[in-house]
View (cartoon, one colour):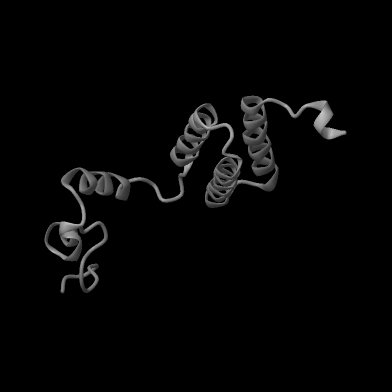
Length: 119
């Protein structure tokens, strides 16, 4: 072994996708997406947050009556946003502000609850 290399496959090695157990499990397009995802910073989930926000909006337009699914999506979005800020080492005030922005965006999209419902 040469100095600085660990035993076995090195980080970023995708030989298993080409020749191993998973080689038949992924299409070429999926393998390319996986390779691209492997190069993304592991502490940046902003793309996932943006994608979930877009999916939530699309779901609201297509199926506003599916409240359980909408609720699950909002919870997932909240967890991903919290995890993103945790990974980035942001302080609690920034996380709180970010979560308030996400919730306000959702409320704006859904519309504020009727005053009659509150009573």
